[in-house]
Length: 350
Ligand SMILES: NC(=O)C1=CN([C@@H]2O[C@H](COP(=O)(O)OP(=O)(O)OC[C@H]3O[C@@H](n4cnc5c(N)ncnc54)[C@H](O)[C@@H]3O)[C@@H](O)[C@H]2O)C=CC1
Ligand SMILES: CC(=O)[C@H](N)C(=O)O
Image (cartoon, rainbow, N blue to C red):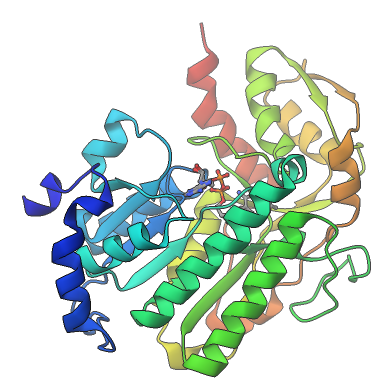
């Protein structure tokens, strides 16, 4: 009950209580003992990945052990599903108060501006993606949290081998999004070596989902096509028909994260892994969608996102994740298309 009363209120209300707790706990490990469920904070929780992840983690570790945070106004369903708190990733004190009040063990850091929107507002991307990361990294160090920071295929650039792109290779991204993600990978690994921080990072490809919309990336066409195909039978693609990019259905992406986070620290040989499930071009996904919507008409009008896509991996090599912690995706392109069409068809049926 106490936890429920704490939902959706500004963190600072509890500052005096928290400051006392802070003094008591400073320099102590607050990690859950192995027989306890971890208490998990998700930043940027109302985005494409956060809502689904909270659901899975709450089923596994208990509703009140997973705290969602974001700067967006939550829906009624979100509020009813478990604790939700307003938290700007740039407000260190607010984050600190949440970590202390809820005795957080794991921090899943999803707040970010994605590749296409990041290019539209570089100063904001630097603040959210880089300064925000500094805040959570420092908190994880101070309170000995296990921290997950996602990276992306966008952390590679045109100088990287693109087909396939191995786990360890040259990384010279040409977007602020990619630069911020390489910074995150390197800073996390540095904190791990220097301070023993339990930093974990998966590089995801484009994630495809039906429940939540993507937040402004280069791979978003592979979600939009389903809505347009079912709604209007017409789709205009902003990438050329032969632009190959790695992709993953959200169920696989979230499962990889949950499996990776549950591993004991000694099971990890590395801190950053590529994960993927499939690679396809716009014309290949069009053909797969046309199995369900045969009269779908597609036109191509490449825009600035083409240049970003042309600098990214075409095929992602995740053999190290497969070999070292048994990562294995379940969805290929047709399997993903079938489940997306099944999930979205009712929404567009008259
Ligand atoms: N969706 C994808 O295809 C991929 C995502 N990722 C990474 O996974 C993470 C989550 O991605 P998505 O859920 O797709 O992103 P999203 O754009 O859907 O969600 C990001 C969330 O961050 C929040 N946010 C923005 N500014 C904030 C601030 N100042 N303070 C707190 N929260 C703020 C937004 O309100 C939004 O809900 C990101 O770090 C992204 O880079 C990596 C590879 C692929
Ligand atoms: C692959 C990603 O990181 C994201 N979907 C984007 O396109 O920016």
